[in-house]
Image (cartoon, rainbow, N blue to C red; front, side, top):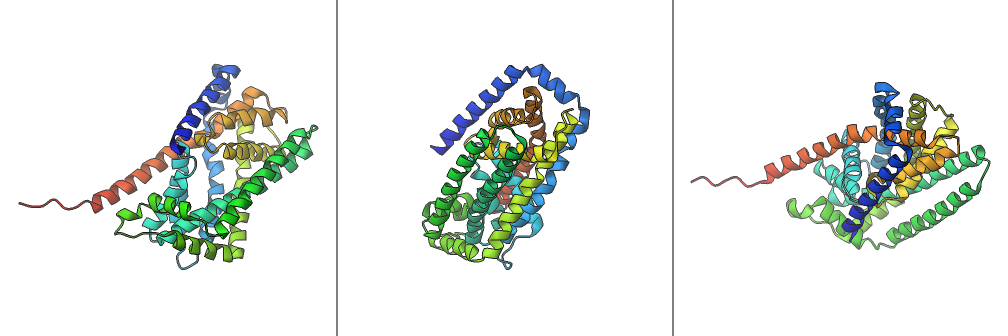
Length: 330
């Protein structure tokens, strides 16, 4: 069912994106992108620093004795993001890939599964905080605060859903999540190791009991989101529509939050572009320029994500070759 919904979401998202391009004029948007020359190719370098606090946030959730190396966690986040962006996996597949990779690199299976579950909670809480920062900027910058009130209502609903997810974890009702972790890690094919729901429950609760580590993880995740605002600021500058720092924070915050809510659509195709047109209009950004900014931000997807997916494939292929039985000699 989930696979069908993600495929449907992909089709609808691409149709929306194509419709927005036709509405604004494909050639006009492409000319606007071309006007900045090759400088737009530098945008991935502006985006990259946010991955560093995000990586450390995930590592902090794991006890020091089992904590993955920073380089391993960084690579796992890169490859997991590629899975989420390029495949119709409703942002779950990337978390699975992250858990599987640190398991391959030495982290116990139950801790790997538990860490991505709690990290997902930290990510959602950070998104709520990030969204509230965006709403505060919107109230400061926009004359009409009706959108801000609607956004606050939406974040309230998201906060309630997050609280429900948290209490489900606290109650130990993690059977379905543990099953997801087992199939994601494919532990049945790795020397017969298995992960039970009870073991994952215990590991999750152990992480939550380390409250300072959880709080630091949320703070680092929020910092990572804030750093992404630089990408919007630079993109607008390169495209000839410079904006202020507060405006960049507001635009990135609200568009990213709307994109995250539409998780069923792979890489938020169409949703991100529509959000940029709506939110950008509040600060005087023309629709064609807002659409061009959104497409410029996707340059990093074209550069970083295929390489990440290829790297993951190489790791899995190498493991498959090593695990394959030797042919019998005559």
